[in-house]
Length: 169
Image 1: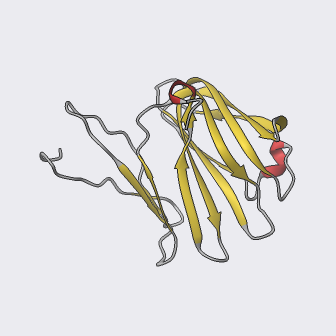
Image 2 (image 1 turned 90 degrees about the horizontal axis):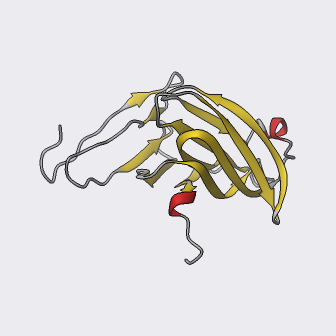
Image 3 (image 1 turned 30 degrees about the horizontal axis):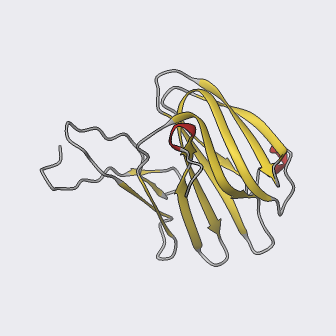
């Protein structure tokens, strides 16, 4: 329980010691959430707004495999339902599909897609960049972490479900 105008934390530690804040929030009144991810060092801190809307189709406007300057993306997909589903990933560059694949996502599960190291299984070369579409038979929430290990830098953003996409910015 969180008091009126209060705040609270949910902390989980992954097996490698890094901290992962993950979970669901609900309230009887409007609520806002911010997620902070730390790599257990004094360097890289990532953050994004909590994801208020999940969808069966989620767009990722910019993802990349490991680039020559050491930047690369990790995609995190969370099943927001009690039903498992196959998740399909389609990658696009210059408007054309350039790779893809599928993974099983268990009920209420969370899976990482590490494009920094596992890009070949999706038909992508090192140094590739473009956009991605994530589709599933259940509602999923998606976050992209863009990371640079050598400089200890990173940034994150939430995927854009079809239901909240816009043709105007």
